Image 1 (cartoon, rainbow, N blue to C red):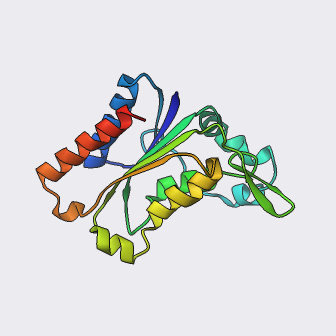
Image 2: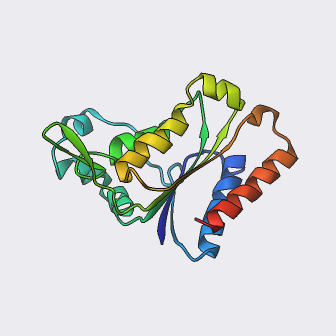
Length: 193
């Protein structure tokens, strides 16, 4: 399976970078073809410009500036997101990726006022996230990243697509042991992806 891995962290020595490396390595070892999209390393521009917004609904002009990213998304059969959760949301670069790349004619169509998913090529979806907050605090805040992955992204690809959401909460009080245990879990889950 061709798996697009979206990675969003600016520091190459971070725990998120270690998770990213484990995801890529485990998927590759399991025989998947990995398209590793490190948004920071690739210099992805997350800003939805005035022009981008004006042509947002104009197909195919809306994809002209992000065509390489569209092609990667459209050729993926699986999608894995590796990212920290900052202020109960995605980092700006990842949010900008969804704003700029998941546009009409790419991730969805609008017909008679109804949204129809287009990314039916994606058969599996996973997210590997880290939170500074503990699970209760994330729950009380509504855990927007979990809902975005398990509800919104799932609905955009296929409402019945399997979704695996792996989260290491309470990073502010994590230990070497909790981080190692989660890293091992991520490796195991990606080997089974």
